[in-house]
Amino acid sequence: MIDHEIRAGDGGPVRARGRPKQRPDSEERQRILAIACELFLDVGYGGTTMDAVAGRCRISKKTLYRLFPAKTDLFKAMVADHRRTMLALPRPDDDLPAAEALAAIFRLDIAEVENRERLAFIRLAVADADRYPEIGEAIALEGAQAAMHLLAEWLGQQQARGALRPFPPETAARMLMDMVFSVMVKRYPGDSLMTSEQRVGHARRCIEVFLDGMAERTIGA
Image (tube, rainbow, N blue to C red; front, side):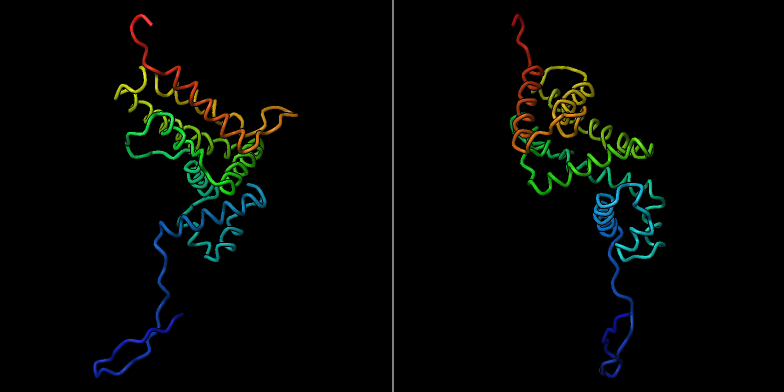
């Protein structure tokens, strides 16, 4: 409890007791997600319990369950939060050339520390998905599918303004995401992962090839 000094009717100070100011739910949710993600990276999905999250966050289980009714809800929110580190979408409409806009969308300028954190999350989530079906479902619904929908929406906007040729946006989004993200996890035993510089170079070449294929064709060309 915290003491607060208020003024009485005669102007003299009176000591009053009150609760410390609580964080808004939106701020508290983000704080919990950040801490829960650290715990997940430390002990994996199976080792992450709601008790452990509440303890590390220094909040009551009642507060935790009010904001996240179940562990699966917490993990889905973690995936959705992580998705924003992978694709900067939605983004404001601007006049950037498509290649520069896609480089920003795929966050090719991300700091190396943040890049290592997002890759660690991807790799652990993919590894744990084999043992916990709810992880695969969360990744599909809150991660890949949501990201693909947002990217398809952006590509559709570019088609509408004539920057890209007509093509099913969802299909185009899936193709581009497969191209860029395929090097972030090992695809087969013995596969070696690219360095950060190699991944950025690979992504830029993928974007170049994709945009070349999606460019408007002149009649007779």
